[in-house]
Length: 275
Image (cartoon, rainbow, N blue to C red; front, side, top):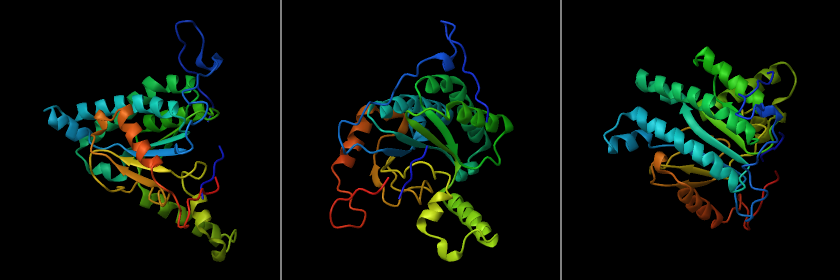
């Protein structure tokens, strides 16, 4: 079951009082402790419905995506304040490259905007940022920004924010299988040594626990190639709310639904896996 372990840091911009973010005592968005034992440790969200939100308002799709980014900003704080330690957001799938070029370009621009605008605040609030997914095909400046964001926040031990960008679950599993096969070919392990934990240890999420709860917005009921190995025993909650309209109350309803369920992991009685 899931494990939990936890390039040169860059300085955040100076604030009005002249202090660099590295000189500050980090704030904690993360609640001191979950008040309810039924609060999930790791929530993953498939953020769907930006285009439909815009279409309902007769607006360009790009404005729906931009409103979706505002929801990301609110939900990162809301999740931390509820005592949830890990949040993974599905930002851009490997299949999204099939969309029109202008929409893809806008989505890339939004990642740039989010990192430039929010990274300093995330770091100040002790959030660790990581991006999973392929780097191939991304513009060099985006790759640099991703590397810098991960380097800057690597030592933070508050909320763990993972953004799945240019990510596909099937490709992730295939890449893990390839690395395991290469290790076998080098004689570093035998085929009989390979277990589910071996595969999990070769995934991009190897150092974070599997999601307890996966939420999908906008009414569709599928995983869409998102964390398909890691979500094997996750509780799934599907809501009709479009992502830009997702609020703290919507989150609260999803968490209440999660808390109402018994998680048995194949056993007869409720069971908690080893972390």
